[in-house]
Length: 424
Image (cartoon, rainbow, N blue to C red; front, side):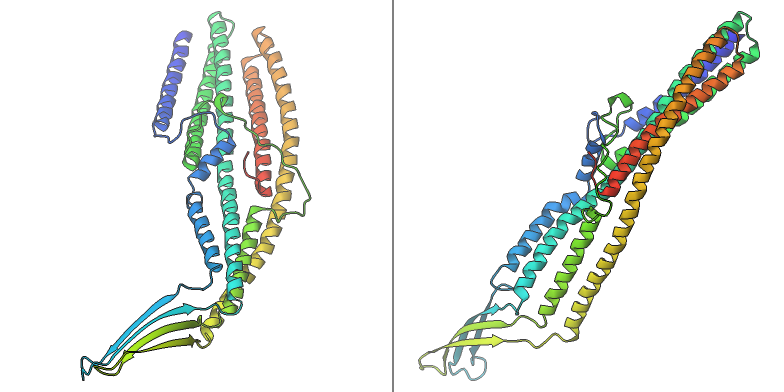
């Protein structure tokens, strides 16, 4: 009878394992753009960044910035224009009057416009690079979140698998002793119930692991290895603390600073562009008054000076200055936020380090207690409920220690994120 109970538990476990295998195969059946080689956090970030729109459009943006710098160094603000005109009296009097004019109109820079256009082009080129760095840091935050969620799921699955192995080992011992008459049938039921609970926990942990792996794959395009032994280094190096007041090197602040600089240069250029560009015209005219008369040649040199822009010019200047003021205010707020976030991240690292020491001490004591009670249980000095309770406490201590190690590594990663450092 006891053998049948154990067999039913094995069937349930086999069905659960089959369902998990089906779920894992379905998740792995999706086509992956990259092979499932051993990966680390940096490799995951590199793969995620290569897929981002900012990364794909970066070469074109740099080309545009270089073209704008070249345009700012040219001799004219706009290309020269060719002017052609032909005047004749053929449609009315038709006395042979002709006039042909060929000229070139050359736009001229306004005072200070050329230098300010160059300054704006330089500022926009710098802003492209800082925007790229800020976009990389934003991608790093998403990758780090998915990465550590996957690491937590891996640890939970490993602990659940170990807990199932221990529960099965106890159930085998209880079954053997029950057949020998040393334990009651109720003890066999308790042992099989512990195995069933461990199987349920493993199934839930495996489902969470599959979801975490798919989330990481969705963000990076890389299929994360199913086994923890095939992964690269887990933790990032701990950053140097450095002076707590230095935040201007952060990518987010550099982006805001460069955007503010672009807005200021835009306002300065708008101030110089108080009117449309004047034009210098050089034309040659060839004309005759009537048939039989000789052609007359003349040269025309003209200058076209537009009037001031008025309200339209004032609107452009005011809008650019408002943008600069808004970015300066946002920069001050962001600097304060990053300082607070940096200090909070450093505090979480210190707290996680303290928790790790305590949880490892608890896990070590729980392992020793489990050894003591396992020996006394096999000698018949401890009852099964006590043995199962000690096993559950030891498993919880191991899980907490493993999770705390991951939380410490994740806290260090979050600290690096607050400092503006990319994964490595």
